[in-house]
Image (cartoon, rainbow, N blue to C red; front, side):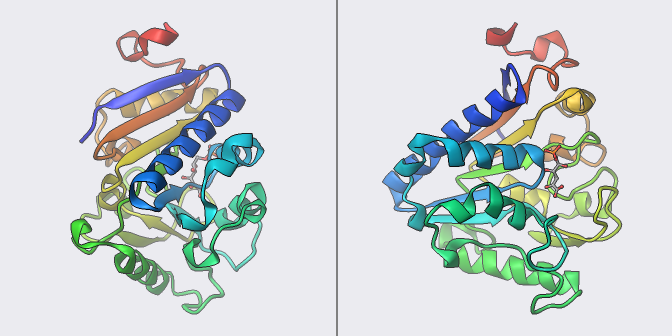
Length: 260
Ligand SMILES: O=C(O)[C@H](O)[C@@H](O)[C@H](O)[C@H](O)COP(=O)(O)O
């Protein structure tokens, strides 16, 4: 478990641009050392903001897009192409504008796909897709995620793991079907905390006043059942990327020195 590091930016636009710059560097470094990179995307406004900033960054062309595997931390279980699907929004923000290898864009199944409305079967199929991409060093579960991004909800949820919901207690499976999500739509697919924690780096994104409580709670020792974001950490690094509004209720002792 890595101790969280916090970076506080002036506003959410700057936060998105700085995160996009970090992401370019991470992907380029991973490709230079292993030949490819695995990145897990998040849904939500802040995750899409990072993708839009990446699309606008001139340095994006430093990435070898054909050697990038994209995965999702969660998905809204809706028909293919639905504007509320995280993959649809990611395509609009970035993916349609760059030369990705379609075989490496690992969208979670849609509700009108091969598993129909059976979200459990869809989750199981995504777990199998992850397992197929895993190497021996991953013990067969999921590939090594270089960066896994998560938007933080105002109730401290991450991916589709909500406080006190069954999904946050999952210790065996890597992917689950989620029923009765408090954030619409009610049916979703999500990576679990064990899958999230296998990532090399986990980046949590939060911007805006409505996230201030959640950020303070998750970083002040709350348990992961009550505050799922508290259980999201990476093996090598856990980075909280915030704007000043989202950081406004942090205890002084946690506030990073450069932002004091
Ligand atoms: O499918 C989703 O809705 C998500 O993946 C969800 O976990 C999201 O990331 C957070 O709710 C933060 O969303 P915002 O960045 O929009 O606040």
